[in-house]
Amino acid sequence: MQRSLHMTLALMPALVGISALALLLPASLAGQALLVAFWGLAFGAVPVAWSNWVARTVPDQAESAGGMVVASVQSSIAVGTAAGGAMFSFSGIAGVFIAGGVLMLLAALLIALRVRVQPPRGRNNR
Image (cartoon, rainbow, N blue to C red; front, side):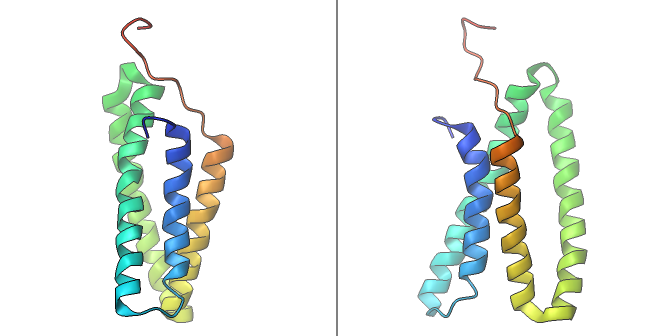
């Protein structure tokens, strides 16, 4: 993240999507555990990266913008839960993993193409 926040913002959802799709492949219990750990590692970096992005983008309103990030995450969880439940009813667990994985890959592409990152503010350019 320190080297390239933009890469981190795009790469982490891509890794979540890839691991979600990979969990559909036949694997041993150890292999599945590694995929879940990989998914958790990538997912855990997402809020840290987005908080850093918000602080760089609107440094004078970082606290308010951070609240908006939290609200959008909570709303996304609610919508994702409802959509995942509907998907599970329609196509089972495989459909949930496919839909989630594809959605995360599309999100990574959108982030890579559309999100702009401000350079970090140093002591000399405040």
